[in-house]
Image (tube, rainbow, N blue to C red; front, side, top):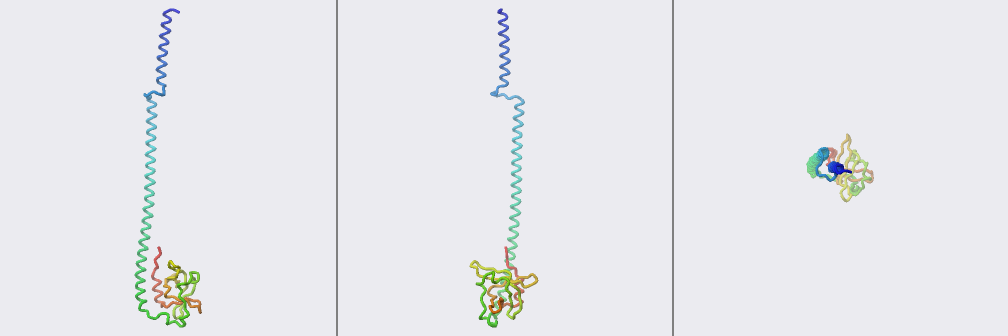
Length: 206
């Protein structure tokens, strides 16, 4: 091989090494200079991530707003029912105070009943025993039948609901009622007018 050929061969080899090195540098995974395509891809990924984060935040805000609206509606409904209960209880208290004032002037009690000594206090009766019993006035007039019983924390009867017709109910205190074993009926020392007045009083229920 001549000297000229050797020089040309060396130059060609150097050129090939330079071209290969440049291509290798472009393909190197450790390059710190991203290509335009890589920069565009990175920008798109960042944009997608930002859009996703904004979407998640909007969804959370919408859910929180819906939950808050449901809570506000439930709270308002509860407060409305509480106000209605308070108004009903106040009306009942006024009606009952008026009833007690009228009753204090009612001197005739159980001694006006014939055979009253055999009567029994119903406060110790059980609810099943009282349910459905007929209630009559002192003169024997039919009042209605027991349809509900209210007891205290000790289980003693404090009042009963008597159905008196035309879908009306009178809550009568246990002290105003006695059970007559001879007739199997519950007797009351209240007049029919007083019972009608009590039917207009609404015992508060929440």
